[in-house]
Length: 325
Image 1: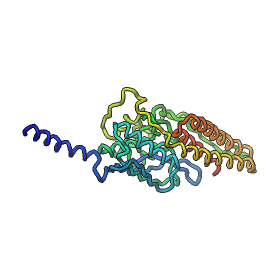
Image 2: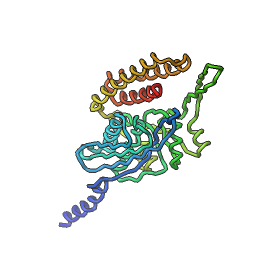
Image 3: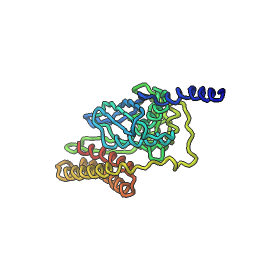
């Protein structure tokens, strides 16, 4: 009898902890992530984006609501983030639904750079952990849990500072940024456009200008630690974390075709324009860069790396839009 009572007592003690991990009505985590927007004058600026992430018992669905519009790769990032979170915690995500609300001042939300943030939010919601409000990060989440490179690091650091962040996390290897600066000079009837590349140390720049601490992170485990103070044990074999992204195949195929079509339209528009040689050359160089991204996207599509395809498509579209505007 005493043995039975002991077992019952143990079960009663454990039940609150099991239900607290993710209660029936779910846990909600609110984070901010930086994005890059373009002003009417063409200048790139950083803007803070709100992510409201709720995880509740369910059937494995991932719902994304965005304001304003979202690119296809935002949906892909959210779905991959949920899969990675499940792998990291060894949780069957088919037993949970994930609800993600995204609010931004940017006209179109897209790109994979919030993938890491969404993964942190889902993990924290599953575990019922608090997240620091003074931390922001940028970085795509890769199928192996590593944090991949993104663009607009300096603009995003500015966005982090503008909303009071003390710590800004960036992908490993992106501390040094190469910034292209363009100058226009009027020489009689001719407008001369020159560009040059500058190396910027983001860590030093952010500390000196804003007092913002910038840290490079390698993977989702690093990100979770800086946001929550919790350490999750890493698998002994990193490959064990890999997530199958075949569910993104249709999205990747459609997205690549649409981006390629957009590239061809803008390329034809540029060819038939009556702009001067200098401006034409500058825009043509930008289009060539977009085409390189698309060629790389095609290769990843053929290799079955569909999430990478979506990411490269997005990068190409950003450049194509710049030329189109």
